[in-house]
Length: 204
Image (cartoon, rainbow, N blue to C red):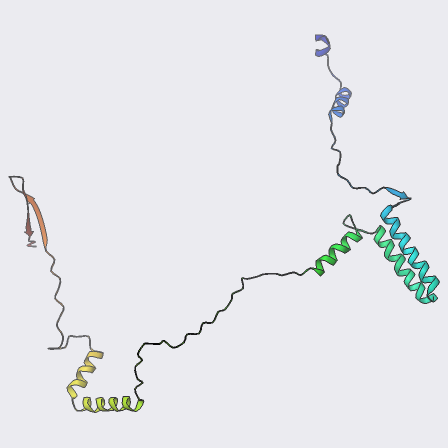
């Protein structure tokens, strides 16, 4: 190709032809398509229809007219539904088996963790001495005796009342807490270079 051919202008029609030749289309793969054997029916669909027809024929020949008609309508309708009806692109037989498995298999929903309760029984400790229970009458007698003893001594009653109610120190009974004395110490250096601590006094 010469330089003149390369530099020649290109029309819009030629550009469209070039762009169409460069376009690529993705071919769908892994598509399951059943082979048609008898008209629009595949082998699986044909077996369903033939089975329903055989059941209808046997029902008409062996049973009375009304019972045979009911069984024939049910068998033919069911087999046509199994052969032709699809749910979301899936055959009705596959959907029916999936539904049966869903309802037949056990399902367990755990919303929270199960806690197992355990009970422990403790027997009486052997070898440990146990205090003898004190009778209640003895305890009541001791309390009454203590009340009578304190009633004869008013100073004890007054002291117990002051201890329970007042916040001021009681003379000859309590002592004031001494204040904590804080001292300030300053460290200075002598001319010889030794360090020495001295008490600091603030005269303000």
